[in-house]
Image 1 (tube, each protein chain N blue to C red):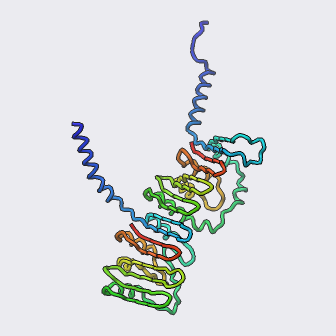
Image 2 (tube, chains in turn purple, orange):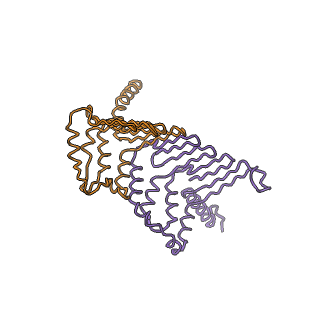
Image 3 (spheres, rainbow over the protein chains, first blue to last red):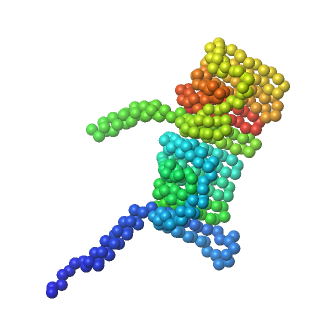
Length: 190
Length: 180
């Protein structure tokens, strides 16, 4: 039998599988938790003599699947107070009106200890806090929150809601915190 | 040829700019609070529509759907619409002048606006200036059960020219509310 050059069935399947996995990985929403401790002199851990840097990439799809395994009884027990339910219309309509509003700086606070700025930028609400001991940046996806709150039953705690909001967040920094004692925490969407 | 096209595009852009600006009809409610003792400065800049949406959906004690309960005694028979109509039709001049050791209060009408000024003479030494355009009088809508439609009042701000609505100056803090 004459030897024919070409790709084997196993190779083709492996290649297709790898390509599929790579495509799925790229198409998935990822959350990256990045914790960076620059100054370890204050820590109690005597072995911590080098700056600490932990980066945890986390596919949201896994979280979506994981929430499906939470026992129904546990969610039923975590009931939302009826007082909160009364304000559903107010909250939803306010967020919808905010989403429809033109982009602008909505709130500006200047004190001796801290500055706070809240901007609306497209579908994102950008919150910036510059305090003496910490700098916080937060980018809140308004459209994601609106969608999640509209779909929510307002009766039981729904962990899926959090991930729905995260899916709607723009790529880049979701939250960054930098403290004056050298801790940097960033939650990024990718 | 290219230069002509560039010049034409530039002229078109210049002509379109004011038109685009005029098309942005969002009215903004501004609140500026300055606390003197702590050097705190708060600036809030919200679209009128957003404020109205909040007001119309708030449902708490004495405030429902944009209506505030004035909590007047049942035996008080005040015809608010009639009073408002009388104020609106009245000629310009001073309506109320109160002078006391605590504060001076002045209510006067001038050039289509009703002005209420309070000059406190003790405690916080506050100076309050409220400017109420006559158009707002039409928007003052009182319900049968002594309720005032605050949402309708704010809605009417949409038709008003830019300007101050409330201005408070005192030793402790300064507050300015205006529409633009």
